[in-house]
Length: 477
Length: 81
Image 1 (cartoon, rainbow over the protein chains, first blue to last red):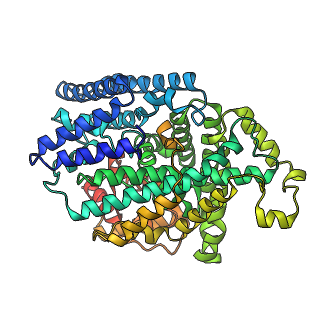
Image 2: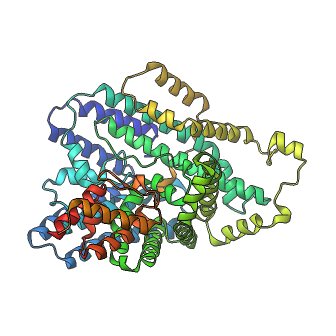
């Protein structure tokens, strides 16, 4: 079951109806758990068993270990198990499916939808927190399993803090509040618009640029266009999924953490990582970056470099085993280290140019740097990435060999039948990005506005690209 | 025994030296958002300098829990008593 599919909405609405029939908190939690297990069961019995088994194991291990004195050895044992299961699933997935971006939906369903990468991180963090005595182990199993399986976000996050999530579970609303319904519905609709109206329009072109023999790539310009489009697609696809997950959870009075904060406005790569996939980077910062930086803090700059290398090294392995992910991680390591060395100069430059002109230069520059790294992130193999790089740096063949006027009027791939569709997607993407702050503010207004909701539904119906059958990209991780 | 005001003065001197910025003026409400150079990449180095200066030691959880200079100053006072 793809989040955003018709089946997903049947499940969501059905669960809401039953959820609000009951008044007791325990009953509401049980209904959410049943719905979550039902969601997982659409992908087969293995995701259900794996997720529930890992939840029970982590729950009881933390309890028992805490009672008997939670030693470092115990922490290593349980988290080694969590990591081995995670890596085993990743490894099997890649062996079976090859590239994550081209794999067919049917074959990879059970692992892709499992979201094991996300709830494994939650469990690892939970064990560390209990070991460090940041909080006591959970006393109730039901909310613990629900935290791992909660159907609106099990596929791709956001990564939850078990304590925070359980606090919101203890305050589930008896009746559906207008504020929850309005904000939830608006977030769901904008998520669908991002996915179906914008990201889906880019899919065809992204495939031409990156898959097979890269038939869409003739010149360096095509490589640049492909990498920019992919970065846009990734943002609209992933943040669209997050809107859907957060909006759906809001229907049950549950507030999930935000995962994006307008990342395309970042003026540096370090700022990008404070705005992009926030819950994942917070996890890496808390459990990898800070411990490494703390351990070696007397080494000053070396400590920072070591911490960055550890964080992005593990992050790239978490995303996948391929060499292309490793290069992507290395590029971000280099970006962050260089930025760290130039930080003082960049601050002075910002003061000299004024923040407005500084942003005019460094916002597109950051986008370019991230898009360049995404060439590797999206390439299916090192061979493909090499081919794209050779084309990109072949300066004699950078610009398309068509008359300038034709290019200006029709674009590069003027014979492509879907060009109009792409242009519509790009225009909507730019309009959204320009008004992003206002749109986000409006979406969080608690007062129901029937005109706005009607507009969003009509807009979605007219401009949506339906029946393409593609899943959300981050379900792969 | 240092007074709380003295600690703030010493902290300000450390921040100025660490971030090479003579314009830094600290108060209890100062956060990382107020000082451009102070972020997760420079935080641990700053903490190390503070530890050495006051001859104290922070745990990792303490270091990442400081919300502002006021929290930092309070933790230093506790360690110095």
